[in-house]
Image 1 (cartoon, rainbow, N blue to C red):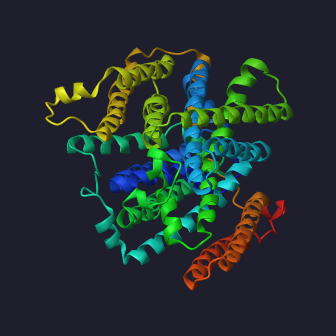
Image 2 (image 1 turned 90 degrees about the vertical axis):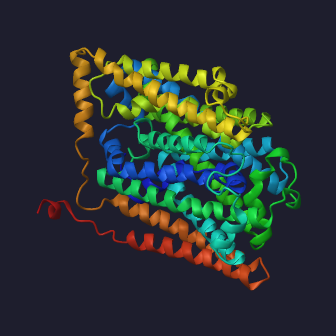
Image 3 (image 1 turned 90 degrees about the horizontal axis):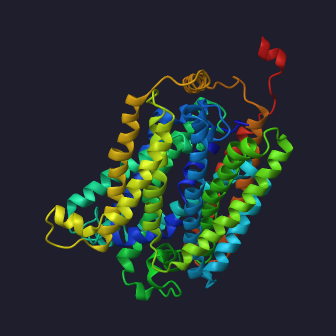
Length: 554
């Protein structure tokens, strides 16, 4: 209904970029390569800052229910279907990777088979997404964000305290080349990767497809504030998330001493678990598991909810039942959510069977080679008005060809010969090169195709011209809500404030678990932080004496 406040919208925008992969694949990368993995998250922060400056309010001002409706208005009905069936498979693959990240951690903690974790977690997320819909998804994202930030903040404080300072961790826990990391023979390749990652994350956070983060905001002002919140969280987050991983690299560099079994060559993905077991009080591993489940659920439920909405609004109501009632549309949405959930679970099981798959590389490949071609027209379409409708699907087609060439035609030996490289490329450089070439190819070839399409522009039909004018008129007109708060504003604060208070009180009970005073202090500190946050929200939600219509008129 477009009634959500900025702090809920900002937290769900942040959590959508965040999953168990951050604590597994990304933490493992931080363990081996220092700062290089943090670059991705800082690039996200820059992307969200651009949201704040421009794209968040434009996204809200499209005045649509699903982002693909914006695609239809801007590029026509054919592109609506192209982007519907191009977006859904990519998000299914991403959700499958997120489930795998969680399964790795769970297997290491409980010794449960990864297949069981993938299935059970998928079912839990399905139940929440089907029964609660968008409100449950966004509300749970906010609560999960609070839990994760509190846990990771305290973990960082403990790591810094036990090491004797941040400088000690950086001195002992970083590889010889702290910025680029290990297995880098050629700096120019790393610099190219660095630049391309910032470019990719800019595109992936600023486009019509990902506008779903903000279309539920109450108005343009709330959308902008939400983007700024996501930006700030993403800017400070990497320091907190990866400090424990760097601590482990400093004090437990030999994985043979970790005591972790069942992960094989994926053992470095258990870096965060090792820190929790060895440095945090007893019970923290369980709390971290709840945070990990929360992180994965927040990403997966957003994917489920968005996919179901797109399927119903942009396919079912167009081709199957044009006169569908709201009640039936809701039922179809729930069925679609179930079906997509089963497909995601199946995808997670398939990815798990690929034993030598790197979660970090898999995530980068999906984002670069599969999703990126869709993002180019979804971003440039905001700025370049006079393009033929075929420019959008044509750009996606060119992008598919570019991705195919990067994946299967261009070989590392070609690059070695082109630049007369003396030493062969390392395994890491080969995977980074795939991402770099993919981004460069899409920017110049795929993006170039869309830009050049302007020269083939001809006047469209009156109906299409009207749709495009309507689209840009909406995008340029701010959404302004009533001056006075609505009842739903108070309810949002009150309900979530109470929930967080309950979590904080439950957390305080955990101080009874550890016998040492330091362990008790850690749990009490986390409990106090959560109770204070919850109490502030409850206080903000108590002012329920709303102005009457007569007062508003006056």
